Image (tube, rainbow, N blue to C red; front, side, top):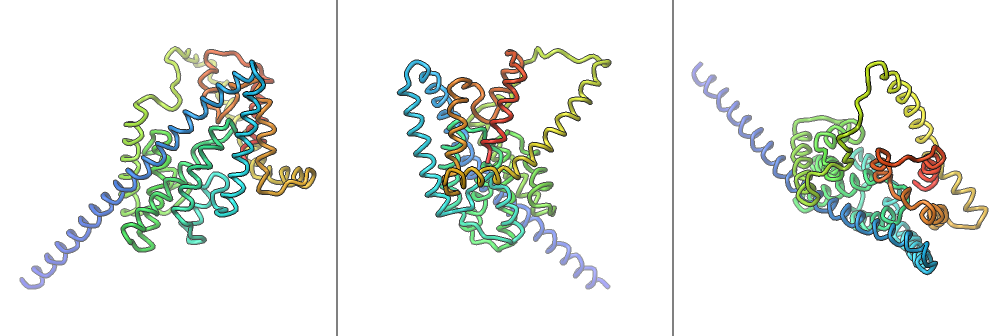
Length: 332
């Protein structure tokens, strides 16, 4: 009887030591992924911000001299040519990158982490900072995921452990982009990986927290959407406005999603009409963005500046609808 009790205690100790070692190992791996992904995404966002402001300044200067506008045309031509070359060599850098990460985690494809990482990094910076209405969430998630895969290759991990670090990197990328580590973890659980286990959430949470710390070290504590403190408080009898706004935004989001998913049909039609191959479809987006940037440069970009300016500026409904049209036509 005493031997059975002793054997059971030994088994419990071995299991406890194994679990403790595994958790510590996952935390350390998550820290490595968080550092790598945080640095990659941090530099990515920093360069986008700097180049985007330069592009806006060039658009302002072009109203004084048309030569500045010609310089932008040459820049956009370079981006289109580079896009065609890079996409031809690595087609998985197209779009936001989130579907590719989901497919990788489901075992449907295996991405070349280094090829996707540097090509998405370069092309993402040029495309987003050029003024197109493109978001940073998707590229940040894909860059983070490829950073996680790179760490797993460096550590020579198993396929299951690699998937865990890819998911951790995706969460770290989102956390670094928006300073929201918990949101990064929940986003990956709900939208990307859809598989929750102890080893997964430990490494993912560690990666998100570390990536967030790296991002805060680079950009400070200023929120991504730094809204003013003097926004008036709505009275209780005015809360019906939120209900109507929720309905309108929900409907707008549904329409937006449908348009985004089917906008390629429009590009294919225009491509056949103007005899443009698929690799050069960005020409159509830049053709739309140039007049917008020339006449309304404050509408350029993903919309952060426009959101922040709404509290101080008064735009007409036509201006906001124009921004929506540009987003729908230039986001793909």
